Image (cartoon, rainbow, N blue to C red; front, side, top):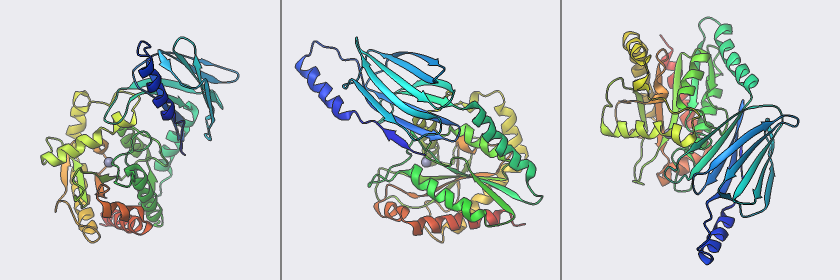
Length: 384
Ligand SMILES: [Zn+2]
C-alpha cells in the first residue's frame, strides 16, 4: 500500500518565471503533482492541476493501457515515467505534447474498469483529476469474502468492524509536526482488531487495511456485508486552538445535533467524501427516498439505544486514560454512523493538533493503551 508522488513543483515555479518574462503567453493548466493509491480492489491516480481542463480518454487492450489527453495543460518536462509497485498498475507515464496537450498513459497489469472524475479546489487542494482503475472481479471477491464471514460465523460469536477514518487523498486532521490523522487511526485500528481477535467469541475486521480512501457510505456497507454486531469509527480531533485536548464519543442523531460543536464536527467528518474523492456524488441522505424507512427502522429497533449504551461504556473506559472533552456522548448527523441495523459510535481519540498529544499519539505506548481501552469497551459491550 502506498503513494508515489511525481513532484513537479519546481517545474511549476520555473513555469511561473517563464510566464513573468513573457506575459503574452497564456500557460493554461499546469500539472503540479501526480499521486497514486493502492486499495485491495483498485488503484487510484490523482493529477493536481492549477486550473480545470478538458480531457479525452480511451482504453486499449494488448497491452492493457489507459490513455488520457489533457487539453490546455502543460508539463515542464518532455516526459516523466514512474514504475509503481502496485497489483494493478505497472507504470505511469506523462508526456508533454505540442499545442498545450499532456498525455497520461497508465500501463496496467491486467484489464481494468476505469472511472474518471474531477474534484474542485477545496482548502489547500487544487483542481484534481481522479482516475480509478477497478478490478471488478477482485471487488466482487472482496464482497463475497466479507459476506462469507456472516455465513460461517459460529453461533454466539460477535462481529466487530473497526473503521479507521479518512485515508488516501483525505489525510484528516494534521498535527503541528505533520502527523496525519489517517495514519494514526489506522495504526490504532490494527491494534484494536488484533486485540479483539485474541477472543474466541469475537471476530474483528477493518474497513480499510491501508492508505486509501473509502467513501463514508461504503464503510457502513462493508460493515453490513460482514454482518457486524458493532461498528466503531476511529478519528482524531483537530482545532485551531493548540491548547484543545481531550477525547470525545459521538452517536448518530436522527434530528438535529446536540450542540453546535457536535454539528461542526459531523460536518467536518462528512467532508471526507469531498476531500477523499468519492466517485459518486456524496449522497445527501435527507433526499434519499429510502431514508424515511431507514429512520423509522432506526427509531423502532434497538440500534440507537445500543449505540448510546456502548458510547457510555466507551466514555467510562477512556476517562481512565485521557481527559474527556464532554462528560457524555454527543449526537450529530454523521454519515458513517447511518447503518440502520448496527450499533455504531465514532471516537475522537485525542487532539492531533495539540503538541503533547501529537507526541503521545506517535508513540506505540499511547496507541497500545488506547487500543486496549477500546477493545476492553467493545468486549464489555457484549457482556449480558
Ligand atoms: Zn476524522
